[in-house]
Length: 280
Image (cartoon, rainbow, N blue to C red; front, side, top):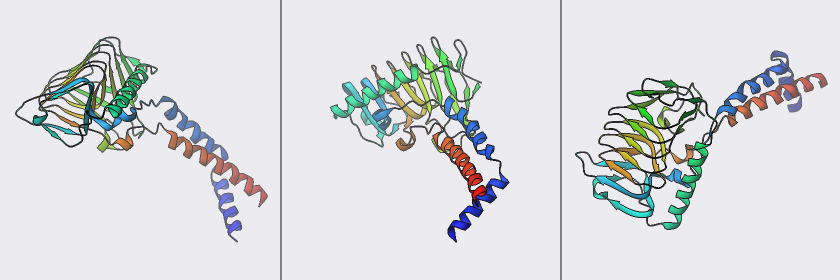
């Protein structure tokens, strides 16, 4: 009886939906998979602040708040920690863990730098731009004045990578805003700023994403980062800022794999439905 019901259901599905629909759906989902770019932070993903030559926190009217772990290696000096509200763990004393995290950060940096480019924006201020998921290249420095809008286009696996040859500088009160994101609470989780030298965030900047800098990162008064400040060789300097680490379990994008599997499964279902229909 159960077998008869199953065959009937499959036969009805096959009659209502053409067999080619499942394959068409899978084909339509393939571009999502092909264009998604993943930058795996590895164990560096566990840090809100990761530095190479120390962390410095300058006293400010507002306490610096870090919602996540911190660490610096091989230089282990941290100054101004009394000016920090640390909702995480200082892992600096764990040499083995720090070494692995720095190695993983270097690997992630090189991965981001090597991704195929979607567009070249050298000489273009990021302010007032609206960008869709992709890899954006600056041969030298990058400037953000005003608001940059990242349009995720409803794709939960949308990834934005900025390859910057030298410095990243944001003007005061600049911001990065994500729109059409199915998971707005984790906006910035798949935004990566690969910076060839140093990054400086101006006063009151509101940034989304993970900064992977070769040397120094400076975050000025009143700035907020929904992401990570990760410096390979240099220091991370903070002043009355807020850094919010993004959920670790969501840091690696699905890259469309779930949707691709769904499309393939539908295609198989319709194909077998047609076959069973002919046998019934």
